Length: 267
Image (tube, rainbow, N blue to C red; front, side):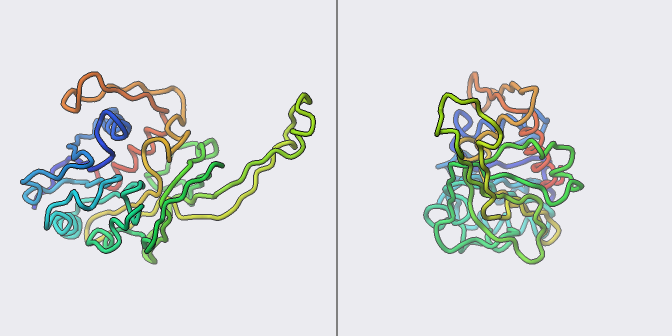
């Protein structure tokens, strides 16, 4: 089946809520896309079309019609489409075991857990690239990347590549609270590095590309990363998604997700 040079983005509520962020990024970078809102099912012609990229982001398995996931798998394997899963309560295992025993789990580059994989932390999870040469992470100032607050925990499959690692941290005051009126110095803040997790994993299945990002694309999990980079971007959304919709986001946040989408879909 011939691929359409287009993305199908499934999940994240609708464009007036969480989906606005990725819709804004793709609009800004001229990436053509269709939408399937969370809580709705793909159109009746879904299995007769082949998109260049399927994005599953906080999209419940129950939204699919029979055969829909098999169609995605076949399109990735034989036609060279891409599949990208972003984190969320209804991604990976999530809250209720969404994708563990599905055809999608077989082709993603990660091993999902068999129990609740949601992780929420009050101190930032710092992201560090394992390489700066890959097109998804290249050209970004990772030394200033903000930490994220939540993610789905998974493991990389043996034949996959980990491009980003997440380091859980704990930040605490040391002696600054002993004298609240005293000037604050660097030594008054302590940051501990704790566990390390694979955070962005990529690979191939058949002739298509697959990618798994542990966090989501919208607050609250992605946290301050949504504002990473100046100048800030103001982006109106296409009217077909709703009237008077827009997002304000950091330029590096937008660049990162645009690069992730473009590489996975070979766009």
